[in-house]
Length: 124
Image (cartoon, rainbow, N blue to C red; front, side):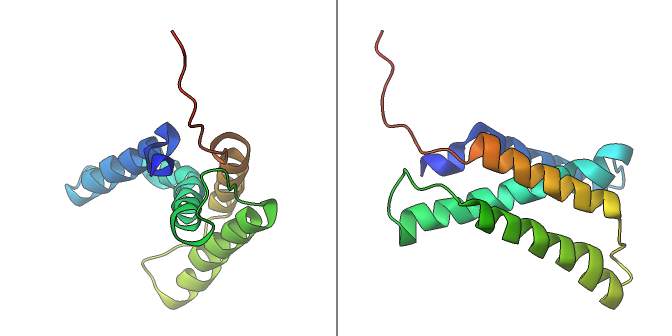
């Protein structure tokens, strides 16, 4: 469960919530609306996957996502949101800057967030 209280995961979810609320209220935040949620997309998705694997499949807080799985998430999200959905819906537009943000988010997740859960408490 500690995987879901990772400060970066919580921050990514809060960013998404604020940007979605601002859009729905008719006050989108210009640059953040276009790019900030894309930067957090892969870290949030990968962290949810990591939590699922730790709790239901691997059953270990020490499991970390291997690079291949993170690369798969980046490629999947890029293809879905920047190639497939723009072809079938006018609601989506292809933006290759988003792909760069997905890659940066994947790198950030792998290097910063993808750590074993430490069960040690600091001694005072």
